[in-house]
Image (cartoon, rainbow, N blue to C red; front, side, top):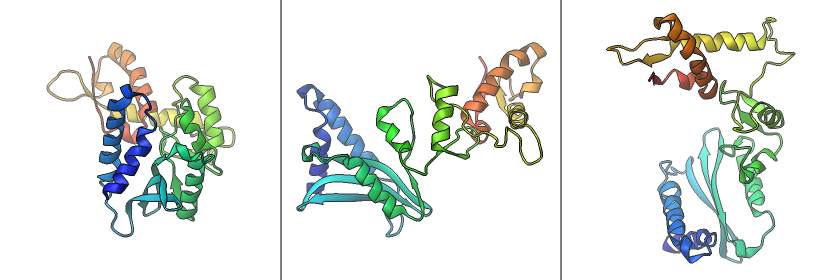
Length: 236
């Protein structure tokens, strides 16, 4: 309804108190409307995007936007009226969403360790972060330690590690196993060198392989095995 849209617009506008921020406020609301009101996941009565309303004495004070999925609930966005002075209202909204999601999964979206506004996502227990390389879930506390140790600046690295001292059930060393897997993927990558057909690493001259291989290995480690295979990499 128009009343609902206007209420959302007012809640968003309170983040931009200066007159110079009018453009930013309008852009923020426009993005909110396109992304969350005109959602591609239309609610069909069971699944889809839902706007949860939080009211005090009938007045709308907050909106939580969630995607109801077959295997759980995805928390998409939240806005609330800061004039209400409700302590930790965002966490209260998360707890209500968790209650609704149980016993299914609750997904809080992307986690960026260096972003203070996102760190709250790792405060709920038990929780896990998805390894961007191997697409396996890792305990959030362990994942945060790995991020701080191995990628203190970019906060993006492989999170999944083999258990039991780095060996799998067959006694193979985890790092060696991952290296072999990475090498296999690197050899499968399609490369555009400006020729009439695409080539692979092994089709390059020895000197070219020595230069390109570490770059491709880094690419696979960052993008993950599944996503890497979908790219055609242009060498310049």
